[in-house]
Image (cartoon, rainbow, N blue to C red; front, side):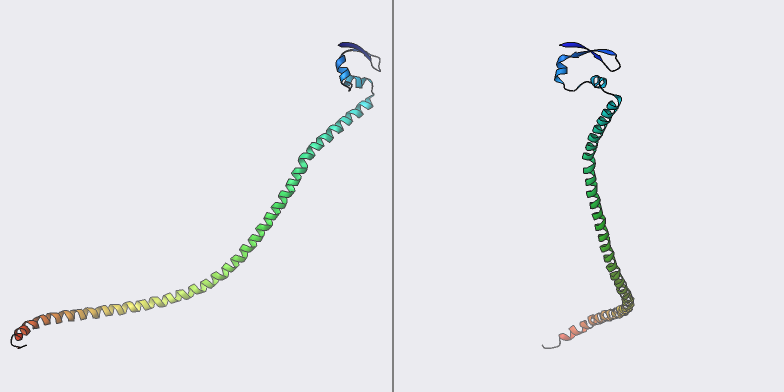
Length: 171
């Protein structure tokens, strides 16, 4: 059911408005025109500021739901980053200590390699001497081989007269 209402505001002007009677009864909140008609400018500004502050508070609560957990997560990540950096510096310190030990070992190895180098020089000289002795020995063995060949040849020449003598022996 629709009814026409005539509304007169403070200035005296008259407005006709159609209202649905079922809607006006079901909603308790007055419309904007009804509010505006019965209030002054200061009250309207105060109400607007109240709505603005309410909206701002609701927005601030929404941001708090995002910002505070994010801030908490950032603090946890920052603490973990600090822990990682601390662990890294500790590990680097251990690597430096190990490198110092390796340096000491390498210095000892350099001294030992110097001794090995000197021993290699002596061994080279000894091998050179042995090589010269082996050449001399090869020369003498060759001479002995030639003598043995000569003796074999001589023995083969002696065996013919010896076999002739065998016929005269009684045993």
